[in-house]
Length: 486
Image 1: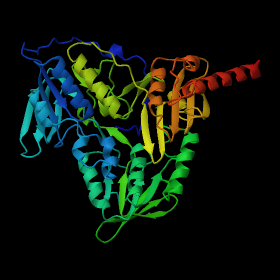
Image 2 (image 1 turned 135 degrees about the vertical axis):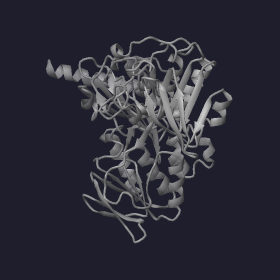
Image 3 (image 1 turned 90 degrees about the vertical axis):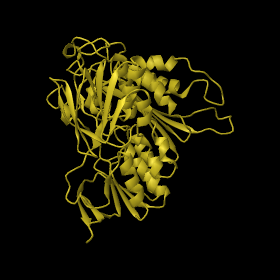
Image 4 (image 1 turned 90 degrees about the horizontal axis):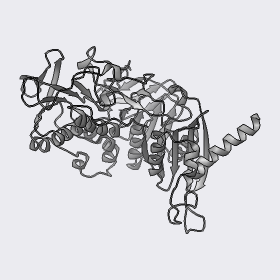
């Protein structure tokens, strides 16, 4: 769902490792093609539905170790905060829906091993202990990710919880009812949304992060300074640039405080949101992976084994700003990649367009959109960039009301190719992040954006759209640099 951890690898061409014989829409013995899907959240659900739509004669077997599928974990903070009253709305599919499509759905089943030579999957029924062995023609690995659990003394104390799935969301709600002090460890999107949710419930909230700024993977300092000041004005404690060293507990084993490199913070509930790692132990050593264990896939979602596909948080994505592979666990990536598996399961038909890791967030009064690299992260991706910041109103001052927009455009030195952008306002301008995302995907330059056609209507924008003005500011910056160096 959210991008808390990015691992970069400078591989720009993967196709040579992914060439193999493609099966037709039948299996090895002339029967219906057999597909086994391991894991069924975003990518798995999307893959199953698309396969059955495109190739309804396919025999699909799904193994899922939870008792639910398709949970929108990006809605946990809304659920915890009481904005979402009925948690059923956080599920966009269910086992019965897939079964109605003719899918053999096995809930509460944990896959124990994959024999990629014999093409067999062995799973255990977690309710009965019974072992199930199923053969396949094509394997779909959509096992997702799991929260990183740091090795910290006392981390097993009661009331220290993770935040990933439906069960954990319910546990957080249960514990928080009697919690006065809530400590969130991790200042990414999930952590920061939980901060808002608990503050709105009247809890004393402390946010701890080892980095110097909140949500720094998505926003540069011009934006996070505004957000941090707003949080502190609301009485939220920011313990930034601090690393958790240990947890303390009472006689019953319930957490009472968190020790960091700079101090001690009382806690009745601690929620760990420090990032995610891919769940790929089953295929370790059997397909090519990044150093962090994310599976490498080509543009058609094939792994280095042509009969094994992967999608979602379990694998890498093609990151367009750097034209390389990266680990970016986002629900948007997962559903697209899952659909691509469905389109390409028989033969390569639809190519991935890659990702810009585009995201949006509402934090109290501020609406935030981000896409591509930041000025601060660009060097990690091997990019030499410049950036420009512009503040302007989103619509003319003669209108009854207007709001200031803070914008930043990041572009490559030499080519002027747009590689990143950030927008923030009390007015909802987050869809502009999608516009900038498309600009990055299509390799547009600052000149392209400066003069691209946007409509003008005083209710919505100015004669020059604010994104036009942002790009024009970048062009002016380049002109001044040229004059200075002439």
